[in-house]
Image (tube, rainbow, N blue to C red; front, side, top):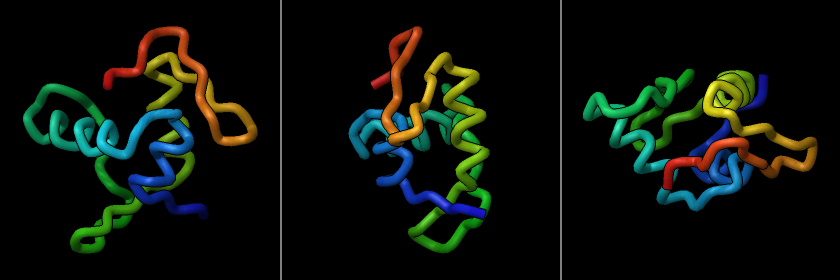
Length: 77
């Protein structure tokens, strides 16, 4: 099981780390549906790779084998 930090998610999604933090913030505000962490260590949430890939796929983001993303619709930044 591979666990990802916010920095890892940003790299995979092809966005800035700040964007991942905004996804988390907007989800807490009820404005988005970013997945909850699979492991919630204080100040260091971690997500399973499969969780992130599934969520990105639902948004129309295809992740390449090198960990970069291409989108069919714009990733919210």
